[in-house]
Structures are given as C-alpha cells and as structure tokens.
Length: 302
Image 1 (cartoon, helix red, strand yellow):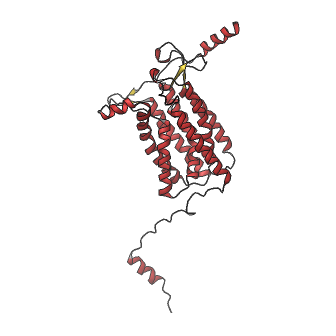
Image 2 (tube, one colour):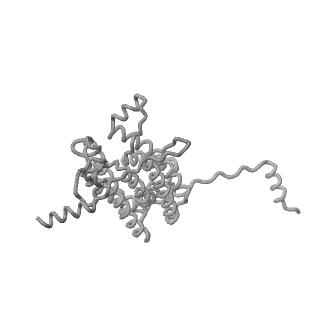
Image 3 (cartoon, one colour):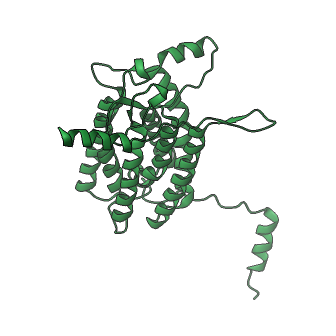
C-alpha cells in the first residue's frame, strides 16, 4: 500500500502544470499570430533546409528538392484543413457552407494524403523518381514534425484520457483533471527519430531507405497513441467502428512503408530521373546577324 501511495504522490508532483499559449495581436494592425501556425511555419522552414542539405549530400540538385517541397506543401496544407472538417469536425464544414469561416483545424493524415497526390503529380510532370525525392522528404520529416507537434502541445489541441501518468498535463483545460497530451508524446518521438535518421544517414543508404523507415516507425506509435485520445465529448476524436481516423490512416501508412522497404530490398537502386537523364535545357536563340558574323569569321582564307 505504501509504495502505491508513494508512486501516486510522486506522479502528482511530476505532472506538467497547465498552460496554454494564446494568439499574439500585433499592435495597431489587429492581426493575430497563432502560436500553432507560427510553429508549423518554422517547422516547414527547418524541414526544407534539412531536406535541401540531405539532398545535396545524395547528389540531388537543390532546385528539385525545393520544387518538390513547394508543391507538396501547397497541396498538403489546404487539403489537410479540408479533410479535418470533413472527417473530424463535420459541423465546421456545414458552417463553412453557411458562410461561417471559422478556423477549420488541421488533419495531419489529410495533409499526408494530399501531399502524396501532389508528389505523384510532381513525378509525372518533372520525370523524377518519387523514391529519390520522397526519401529526402522522409529524412527531413522528423525535423519539421518536431515544431508542428510542439505547436499542438502549446495549444493542447489533442487531449487524451484522464490519467495519473507523470507526463500528464495537470488541470487540463481548467477542469481539474490531469490528461495525456498526445502532441507532447509525438514531440518525444520526433526527437528520437531526429537522432536515428542522423545516425543512420551518416553512412550511405540505398535510395528509398528513409522513405520506408520513417512511416514504419511512425505508424505503430500513432496507432497506439490514438487509444489514449479522448472522445469528442471532451474535445477528442471521433470513432468509426471503434477506431479513430488516424488509426485507419496509420494502417495504410504502415502498409505503404513495408511496400517501399520490399522495393528497396529487391533493387535496383532508382536513378533520379525516370528517363535516365535530366531534361535538356533550351539553347539560347542566336540572331541571324550573329550567325553571319560567325560564319564570316570562321571562313578560312586561301
């Protein structure tokens, strides 16, 4: 009995105190900066820089990495918001149809889905291997995810069930109960994955290695953590057939990661360009006058 009481008391002492960052209003303008949005923007910038750095190490030109990231972000962010309303908060979607444009929220897996569609389009348009550029994106993913999930944690938009776990947030939303905070736990996952990809990336790896590794490492963690999410009554996620939408997406992600791993293992290692060579740059036009001058200069005297 005494050890149980001691453990309970220790857990209470170690609980994370409740806090929540609010929007900052720029004086004189009235524009409010949301902490979540700011941290997501920082994550995109940091992840992009890491991707360009890793791409150069693997012989991929920086402009290709930058173009790939640009298109996936342009499609991923809006679609992540749209799918969040449709899947998680249909009442917000109905509000938008009535002209009530409240913040739609963000679905991470919705963004992943849209980003994947954009990546497939990029592969077709630019004739570059998705295994190559996708591998670079996945290497950089934990660095961006760290800031994104930190944004989730500081605004506490992923409430978990009531618990006395020592990493729970005390007095969650001022309701007097400690709860798991799923954003915080994925911050820890991101930190661990950053160390892992840097360590594994210190030696040459086949292209597609990280495109398999990161989904395989993320999907089981996300699937397990979603069992700790609250129900919609307490600000949590909806369930379909007893599972959250994130758990269904996690299964798809795990399957995709395994398929990529099998492809990497079977080889051969993919080339950057699907056609085997970069597209030819258009040659600068030469004026008729310059051609004549060149012709006269090149004429040998007899």
